Image (cartoon, rainbow, N blue to C red; front, top):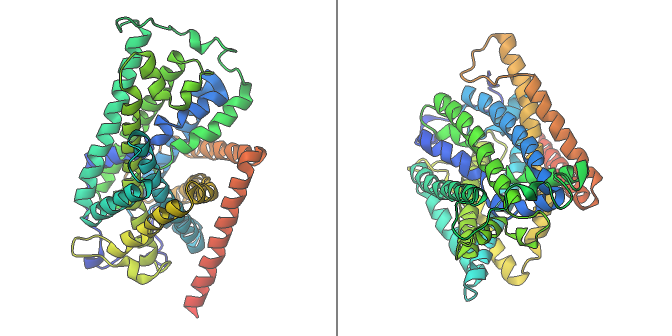
Amino acid sequence: MPANPSVAAPAPPSQKLERALKPRQLIMMGLGSAIGAGLFLGSGVGIHAAGPAVLLSYLVAGTLVIIMMHAMGEMAAARPASGAFSVYAADALGATAGATIGWLWWVQLVIVIAAESVGAAGLLATLWPQLSVPLTSLAFMVVFTVINLMGVRNYGEFEFWFAILKVAAIIAFIAVGIALLCGLLPGVPSPGLSNLFEHGGFAPNGLAGVGAALLVVVFAFGGTEIVAVAAAETQDPERSLARAIRTVAWRILVFYIGSIGVIIAVVPWTSESLKSPFAAVLQVANIPGAATAITLIAVIALLSALNANLYGASRMIHSLAARGEAPRGLARISSRQVPVLAVLASVLFGFAATVLELLYPDRVLPVLLNVVGSTCLLVWTITLVSQLVLRRRAERLGTPLPFRMAGFPYLTVLALAILVLIFALLLSAPETRLQFLSMAALTAAIAVVSGLARRFRRG
């Protein structure tokens, strides 16, 4: 997919990021970013909305994410860039589109980083009330800022082991659930599969429930785009990325569908215990300390996501600066080949959030998260449209592609149709309509400012 030289001029060798991430680290980053607190703690909301039919919601959302990952992987393998989908949108749709989607994703991430830091501190405080949430959040921000300033090698290894812990927890959970359902746990009767069809049937709330759950479920998969961002700092990105995309895609489905399948089979969908669904299953399995264990795993999930999001945010703002869409100083690279100023710019709000949490507990961040809550859907939409344009361009020019998405253009169109459905659901539901309109207003504001700034620079 040929690049547009007017959009992103190559950086001089001294200003290039280091290609030090290993393929295994890229794979685990992709898994780790997709497996977060949304699965460990938030999946109960989707189950309450759809009942056992929430499996259909996960299959639709999972299909969307797998197609999106393959589309993004095709572009990233052809042109590894730390700006990833922002660069591809600029190539396909113009500089304003690329800058808008890059800034939008960066704003989303810096707010989410703050929320994850405060959220992890809040979860720990439920186990040890003597801990101060603002001070613990501050400590998390300091630690992960240091990790991201130490170089991509250290970051990649740290994130690898964080993701390993989450994956191991899910595998162990699914194993316990299967043993319980098969009646292999001593003293614990198996519920069989009765919970899938009792309490109103498989789809007690019909298609409306499946649609409502889809709105909850789709956001749990957010973060998978970090794989394309990291490709720019991966050894042999063309081969590594193709392997990571194929591996991560099917494992995400297995882990999500396997976990949710165990939960809805073991615990009735009407149960109040689904506020913490993993703990509910482990309590049925009569495993002591279940609530504490799941809380600690959720903390790890949040901190892993914080680490990945800080990495992604710093690389995106670095890419924007290198293209002249952000202050040029943010493009500078240290002797460790780390964009230090970009990292620091990406954590400023996280540090400010600790003060906000101290002054206005549980009041500021929820409002900000509501504003950026739908931005990942817009990023996916622009990514798929960009792939349609760039793939057609590559075929027209006879440009070879290191990794080609199968089923083009039909699967890309299918994914866009799913996204149109999700946007329609967002607009039709009163509780999510404001979130959609806020996202649209923020996007329009960024596009206007970006266009005016570019015109001002040209004089």
